[in-house]
Image (cartoon, rainbow, N blue to C red; front, top):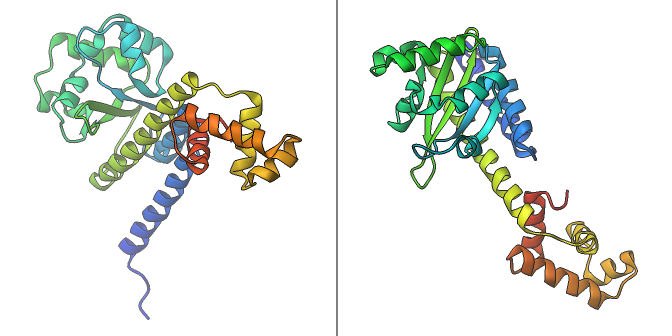
Length: 253
């Protein structure tokens, strides 16, 4: 039997790496942990920083702009300068994201668009924070809202195949980050009592209403009432869905 072709081995290794990445991302419960997974996945390309988020409407306040950020491992001092000075609306990478441009290296900006003097200054200032080379991907929500995903470091050199892989990584990571952000918002809106959380926790372990009552030393009727209240608060129709929603939003773990 002939040995596997080197290209086949390389492709298989990338596929295995992708499965590992998906599993790690799936288990993330915070956007910080999603960032850490993305950084671990891309570090071999020279990536030291990640920033991603939806593009806010023009003339949005600094606070609003920051609220659109989903993934953030970016130099704090540079972010403060960037958003306080309104650089978002002069940044040539953002202009290309709004146009839905294919993945691009920052070194190609002058070829892809007409970079203004202000835009050129922004990119030069980023160098001060070791954001010397970068790659930006333009993505979109199902509603058509543009999302930018940027990785950067002192030196990046992804080949065309790796750029395609990065599109998958970015899309999946952003999807998880959006779900986490949405879940955190719902968690802030939904308040469950300690007893309701206890009842839901045991329901997630597969216990029946009678068994939950015995475990918590309450009647099965009271346990059932707590579960009914939880379903109403979470806006679901079954205990299974209530458990799934509570796990997704971090109300139980």
